[in-house]
View 1: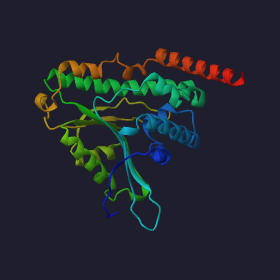
View 2: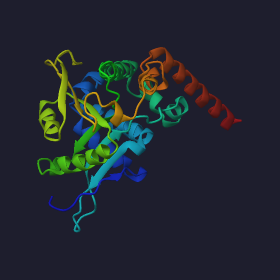
View 3: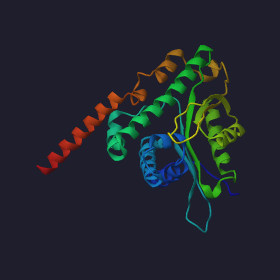
Length: 280
C-alpha cells in the first residue's frame, strides 16, 4: 500500500471488524492458548472474538485503526491496536456488568476465566515492578500501554504496521510519555526495536499449554522525552505514581477472584430481578 494511511479512533460500528481481526491474529498466541486450552481452534476463535469485542467496547477511546484506501473496493481495516494513556480512568464494576464481560465463566468455563485473571495479574505485576524500579532510580516518567497490535494478513510486510504505529508514537512523544508493551513473539521484538523500543526483560517461564514448548515473554519500553531519570519531563509526583499503580486500586481488583465472583453474583442477581420484573 503506497497511499497515505490515516489513524482514526475506533467507531462503534467498526468494533466487530476490529474484534474479528484481533481474534484471528491472536488465535495461536501463547497467552490465549493457555487461557482457552480446553477449546479447539474454531471455538477459541469464537471466544476471542467475543472477548475482544467486549474489551474494545470498554476501552473504545484507546483503540486506533486504519483502513485501506482502494477506491474500487469498500474500506477494509488494515491495522488496529490499543494505546492507553497513563491516568486513564479504571473500568467500574457497573461498566463490567453492563458489558456482559463477567458472563465469561458461563460461556467458556470457570477455568478459562480463572486463567484469564492469572495472566492479567502477571502482566500487572510486571508493570508494577518496572514502575517501582524506575521510581527508585528517580524516574517519574508516565507510561502508555500498547496492546493488541494487529495488521491484516493481506498487507503484512508492506510497512502498514510500522507507519501506523510510528504515527501514534509521534503523538505520544509530544506528551513526553513513555510506551510499554509485552510480546511473546521474537519477530515482534525485532519489529518494535526498529521503532525505538528496547528490551527490558525476558521471562522464559511464561504461561503455556501442557503439550506446548517453552514460551518467552518480552517486556519492552520506548522511553519518553525525559528518558531514564526524567522526572522533570514527566511532570509527575511520587504520590501520583503510587496512586496509579497501587494494587489496591480498582484497576487491580479484577485480579482478585473473590472480588470478581462477588460481582458475578451481583450481575446474576440483577438479571434474575429483571426477569421476574418483566414477567410481572
